[in-house]
Length: 326
Ligand SMILES: [Zn+2]
Image 1 (cartoon, rainbow, N blue to C red):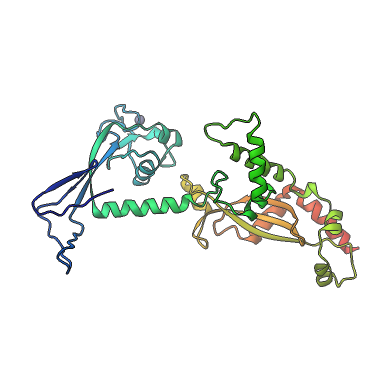
Image 2: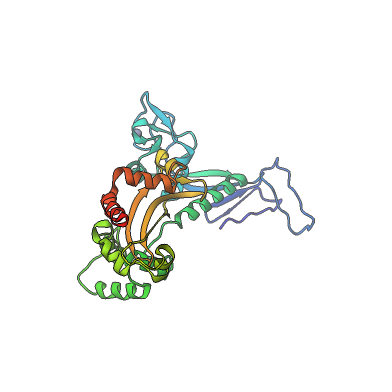
């Protein structure tokens, strides 16, 4: 909590490692109510932060003397490390060029970086405002990744879609399995492990290989579709629906990948997949992943699938077409 003290008799006020200093030269903007005095932009907050070194001649990551190929740490990396590791990298800090992949610090380096000292960093109110807005963006992006550990994160339909179990059934299943010898690891809880296992089981039951066209004709076509598409007089034509869908993903630190997965229409990072379903909602196949930049609309994805004959789609479709021609 930051407390801003505007007492004219004190130039500096300290509270819980946070100092708020009133600059003598600053002019205060006074609002109408005399008991409420607010100041704009001229105040500086002094925060106690874990910081890396900022020597011009030493790498702030490995602390070795810098040679010819030193690079300045980008503001994107500085923000990322501040929010993910709570380590402040002073502006202008430099590192060896070998720590970078595609102009960004590698994941290993982000994990490896250590604070060098406690630094009293002065931040203006506009700096604080900027940091808050960056934190809000990160929070918003972070919420797009789903978590099986947070029971509020997915609704009943999403549990059903991912694991083929309802949320309550999934909770019961996790409880039963948890009483066995299964143990959580440091990066995967029992709940997540079971969720991933069920997702994979479901994926193994997807694709053109797992269902015959006879199955699609027999149990996969509704009467109304038969009536509308085939005039109700044919019972041996399978009808499938092909449509693209998408899944939001975390914003990538790989610039090229980030560009290819950023969708201008949805204003977020996402991957596309092509769903092939029957009219009774049975998922025959899900072909993915596809980038979501402007090149990849549904028609382009379908063309790609046909040209590559993904999942032997052509033989499945051709037997379907040939049969229909008879
Ligand atoms: Zn280094």
